[in-house]
Image 1 (cartoon, helix red, strand yellow):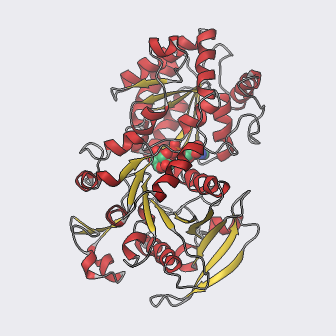
Image 2 (cartoon, helix red, strand yellow; image 1 turned 120 degrees about the vertical axis):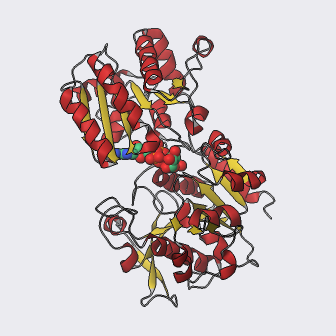
Image 3 (cartoon, protein in one colour; image 1 turned 90 degrees about the horizontal axis):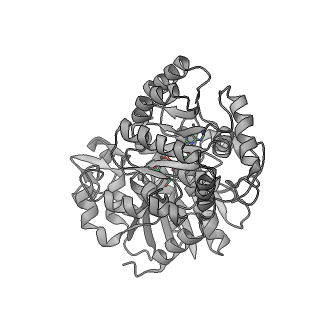
Length: 480
Ligand code: ADP
Ligand code: GLC
């Protein structure tokens, strides 16, 4: 099958979160299964700077733009498939975050920038450029690619898939944007891209695709409720026969404690000694007090409301005072960044807080920590709990979305059958988090049980194998 993925980020060219990991590893998994895959992303300056080999394979003229848009091509690692980058300087050749300006506000031309990405995807689908490569399937990711499906002509024989990685980002713009983008008036409708008198990119994907997927079965249910439907629950209920939850996989080439180039000591389920050595080396590196008998706790993630940082911040002073060492790596909301830094200043030697984005450190944390904390308010899938289990690091998670679907809680019964892989808490309060952390620390002291917990996590199959297959089945399912 010829499959075109359209996304706003993909590791390693550009990454702000899990979307980048998935948009790199899912296409690669499909390419390795023998499919002919293209991944279309914007040629941000940061992405271009990283390209080792590239060539311009097409120049596309759009009537609304003064200059032509170039498509750059680079390889997709270890496959014959390709990454295509939409190169248009005024839209993408700028420093900084793909979505936000220096002040943390969305770029004021985001609608035009990501609409351009969608437009170029459609020229490929309609075979309106010199590429001569027409996909059987177009797989669009998140709101930035939401306007692909509505722009595709009805007579095109193509399967349209839209994956919601996070419903809380919808790409909402004023009516004037709809007009200036030159969209057909009939799209301004309830069963079009109009949403509360505004234009919604994500609605384009949800309304006009053959299948809507999201990244875990539980989140697929949750987004049909008013709690987590972000105002779109009615539409999603209406399309529920076309809505499927497929749990993300993780890329075992990038995340493997036995080969990871970022970590100090390699290890595996059969030879776990390296894990303790990583812990001791990192605790020294991060100036943390404690020894091999003290569980090391960790958090890595975007510092945003979704991740429950407020809960963590409320729980930390008590936990640190009780002597639990913590390492925290994150970037995001400046208020949350400052709050965590203040906690670090108040508890020297007990917590290391690094504000910033650091791929290497995120791997070192997975290798070094005993317990990884993810108190997310909601979590479409979450990758770090799976990286953690694969690295023998036990996750403590809130019972939501993909966290609920991937962590087997340490109930007495699951512990007895050695199937437990982590800890979950249901009430979203700092007290519940603290209690669960105590529970984790208690079990950590029981060497045999802890080892069983680690090994159960490490033996779970989180590879893309199953999920890539589930997407392929969907592509082939009766789509119209
Ligand atoms: P989300 O996509 O909501 O951010 P995920 O758990 O799916 O959450 O994926 C987050 C990804 O981004 C993981 O690979 C994680 O390690 C990475 N990540 C998040 N914040 C940072 C950071 N500050 N430094 C390095 N990696 C980070
Ligand atoms: C989103 C979600 C996260 C998910 C990731 C990849 O950013 O917040 O839960 O793992 O996309 O699908």
